[in-house]
Length: 160
Image 1 (cartoon, rainbow, N blue to C red):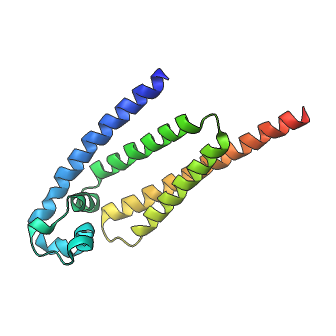
Image 2 (cartoon, one colour; image 1 turned 180 degrees about the vertical axis):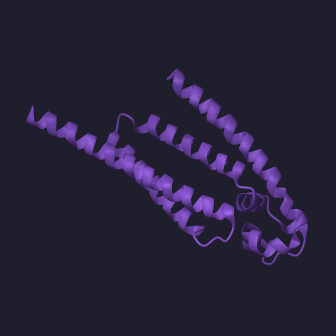
Image 3 (cartoon, rainbow, N blue to C red; image 1 turned 90 degrees about the vertical axis):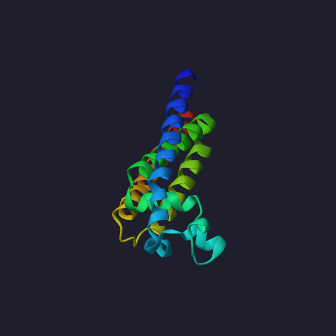
């Protein structure tokens, strides 16, 4: 349990640091009005077309950073995903079937998020597409591994 809290603490610190760094890097969108049409999806949902700096949502800072300076947003997503996996494993380690469902749901979410940036012309969008795709495949692979381990162990109990 001690090792769990150490991992949780380190991953949380990395998540917080990378979130602030991503937000700071993404604030460059305020100086690039020609990019507002393409990188202010959250602001456009709430305000319609963005006309001035005051209409730009803080979430759009992350979108802009992910598109043009993806290092810290990728670290942010990796640490967040690690936290989800760590907490999910801790919650469901005694209930392998629920952990398999958790991994499958997480993989499906990663595939959907990956598909949402499939046609991105920016390097950051392409990086996030492949990251989501590979992470989803890894989650499915781990879920299949646990599935076969669960039923193999169950079969030994029934036979033995």
